[in-house]
Length: 312
Image 1 (cartoon, rainbow, N blue to C red):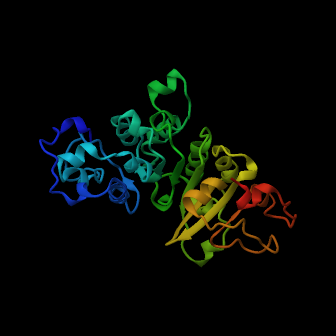
Image 2: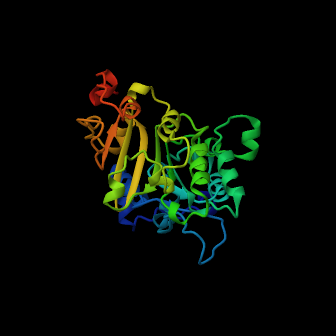
Image 3: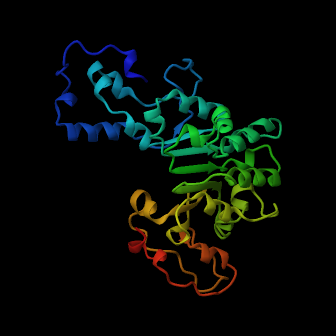
């Protein structure tokens, strides 16, 4: 929504109690209004078609209350504080390119929903691989890439929670997930989301392909190493982490400073198992060393990177 599309207010419109507040309090209220309860799903450009069945637009009702707020409100927090979810490259790229360079650079958190992948439409799978190529050359600029459309991106989520309903063979879906991670780099956080319902699934290691594509007989099991390479922090300041809630499993690799500042300020360190035969906790974390030696009782060395207070 461009401020140039609405004329400036002819008066100060002081009848609004919001505009009468001190700027610090007003900014706090506006930021709260701009923060969605969950992901903003398939947002459309403000000049997009208006249809009942169109994906819901950005939640900017506050800007429509009066012309003064429309022109004075800083919209950057709308983009820095929210997660934007898309199921096709076209919708994602169209929305990002509709934003001003200032606002597109404020995008921090994006989620790709794999629900639209299908063997009947193989072009979408190829489009995602191209869009996630992370190149900076002229070819990438002309074809489009997430790196170019959202240069300030910190967190990328790949949502494969719909794997029971995705019309692809398990091996094909697993390779798609692996290949989507292949060329991403420089993030602070990467999250892969799967479905993990029931006690039996809770006992499976959080790294198992069964949570993300429905089976573990799908070939090379290198999900964590591929996720690890997408986060730009040094090895000693990164951690593997997982959380389960309402039948959903989120596996992530995240830099420890980002984790403490933006996700969990009370995180105190990796989970510990007495033996490699013990199950992993339903919610927990481990270092790369812990992951690589998950099938042995090798003692993990103590280093600075494993101390949250020393990770900054």
